[in-house]
Amino acid sequence: MKSFINVSDIGPLDKAMAEAFEIKNDRYKYQHLGKNKTLMMIFFNNSLRTRLSTQKAAMNLGMNVIVLDVNAGAWKLETERGVIMDGDKSEHLLEAIPVMGCYCDIIGVRSFAGLTDRDYDYAETVLNQFIKYSGKPVFAMETATVHPLQAFADLITIEEYKTVKRPKVVLTWAPHCRALPQAVPNSFAQWMNAADVDFVITHPEGYELDPKFVGNARVEYDQKKAFEGADFIYAKNWSNPGVTNLADYGKITSKDMSWTVDTEHMSWTNNGKFMHCLPVRRGLIVTDDVIESANSIVIPEAANREISCSVVIKRMLEAL
Image 1 (cartoon, rainbow, N blue to C red):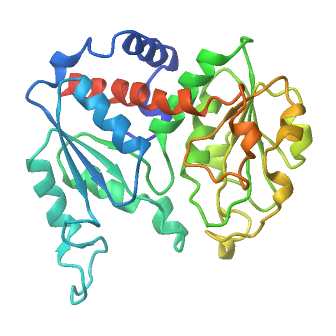
Image 2: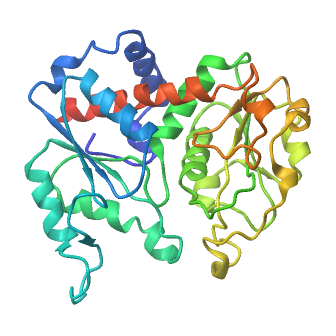
């Protein structure tokens, strides 16, 4: 595997899931693969779970790890081509990327959407430069449009906690005080479409995700109807994707607090489990009683980030 961005990159899901549970049973089984190999993790944005879980996964596999915070200690990087670099950016990504590639065997990149230029974001401009110029396998640690390591971990968690063969999984929008990217919901939708689940997306009108991620999911604008009989509720805010109105891209066009997941919302479900990628704004996305309830599986979900990342890095090491 030379790159990991979308669900198609992982191959047959049944094999990937079997591998995930094999690794979860013995996290150090493949540590010989990473001997004398180095992972470079490059962060253009903040991280807690991604940084810790990815570094732990690489160490489990016997790798050395280098972490670069681009905005804390590195030269400011220019990402645009054809510019006159007479501002505060001292180095261009086109030189920095191949230099980074000299020092490692695999690269993980975290670079969020700017939420001002939809074409730029959805072209995955920064990530694709790493793929093109580094000369090394590259995986996404959340990019402008996707977060596949999170979605893979979400699927592992659903498989662990489901009580029926084909559970009903609902992705619900919830309000937030800041404009957030669509990467997590995009990837979650993509992976749920590939899995054997009854998948529903619910959000206010105008918040439609890009059709290439929505796929065959059922879109329901009535949140109560969407929640009815659900086995899993995945709450996540996203800013306006600009699908129905490009001028709205990246904006907050709804702050409807009735979408906050509380005990009444969860009572509509089939004793549903609550999921969220974290960090979560309590009182906006979800109430305290729901996230602290016995049906909240956000911590096991976060723990599975180590497992999803282990599978991805293992496959990249095997392909070197």
